[in-house]
Length: 151
Length: 397
Image 1 (cartoon, rainbow over the protein chains, first blue to last red):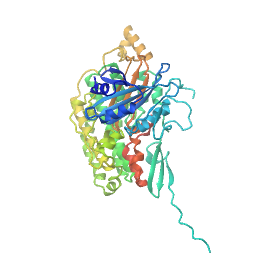
Image 2: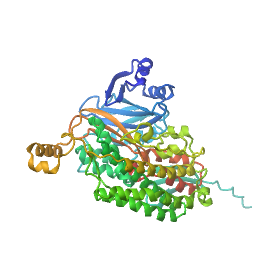
Image 3: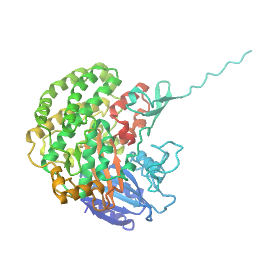
Image 4: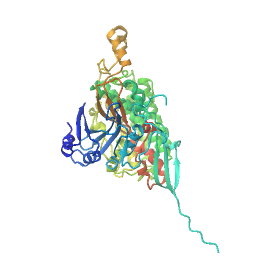
């Protein structure tokens, strides 16, 4: 079990939903409400020191509900280890979560990509617009109902 | 009497660079706002090469994803497959035999040299030096020949398989590879002589695109980009995979400035270090199998498919249904020539991946172009795109 899990449980006891271990990777499922605080805590804490955000991925679990999730992969250059944070979003029709751009600048394009391809809104993002698809595109290609052919 | 006209106000000008431009290394458009010749802002517009690889993966078996992965970063085709195979193997909880691990390292390091040579040639060419391109391609051609030898493909060898390799090394490969390894340091001196002390080169690169170590981490920089800013981090050393712990190599760091010249020095040294790993891997190459002995992952030998009913069934099931990793999610990153190449895989227990997220190094690095461009001359934009060593196929996926 990753050392960050205990710290998170102590700091944000009501936010942790579940901790999953798979093939040595730790995934902490947290509630969406205080994601920015959690990220900032993990970045600034001296023992875990997750100063680097590897990636943000949007996930679509349709037809399950909650349908949308966002996964954050963090890396610590101090301990050379990783942690995945996962958040299931409350709304299935208008998924939204706080942006973590104020915590890591690199989140900028990752969040724009998740918005573009999965239709997840990031509140407080400085410039949330399509990045890979054309600006006037309708639909979100990575959603499960989006067809692979015929477009 | 005519009134004196007020001095006209200066305005900024918006200049469109690309999407078709020799120095954008693919189809990249940069919208630059200029005040005279100084950039006020530069915003990359990407997506011209978006092929939806992540989406395409969701509808095919894990093995059928491999040809797509080759094309993510087409200058380092085999490295993408390396990362993807490792990720699926992690999901399956298997480890490939030692010989396969070594051969993978050999192919990955050859690819690293080829990718760095391409970067050096095009970067120098953008800034006005044509000779490094020709010198570099002389060596790159030999690496392409080696790739062709193992699999028939030059840019896209498609030699790695989940659970090992497609075939063992062909006869004569080790001798030919050794010949390259022996000659390369001398050839490398040609590039070094042309550029490292070249006044024009230094003038164009020193002080351009400065990034401190903290900023580099904040912007998610990895690989040579981060090391150029003094971040002492290499996934091959710090989170070893595929037997990298067996090899003795150094992680070159740049000068304290963290500028374009510093990143140039880092990549130059990395070529020599890759060569060093190659020599050790070729010398110590162990005997043994080249794929895991597991009927759920590896195809049975062809002779057995013709003679043994169990092997035939297993072959059929693997081709039709594919490998079925247990449900779960993992993240696997490798040190690609351009930085951290990561794969976030989610399996739902079926033969097709539920979600494949490719963490492409070029995509992340390009994000910081606007920050680096502010207040610099327009001509520096060309140096900045060059130093980032981006491949637009890797940016857009």
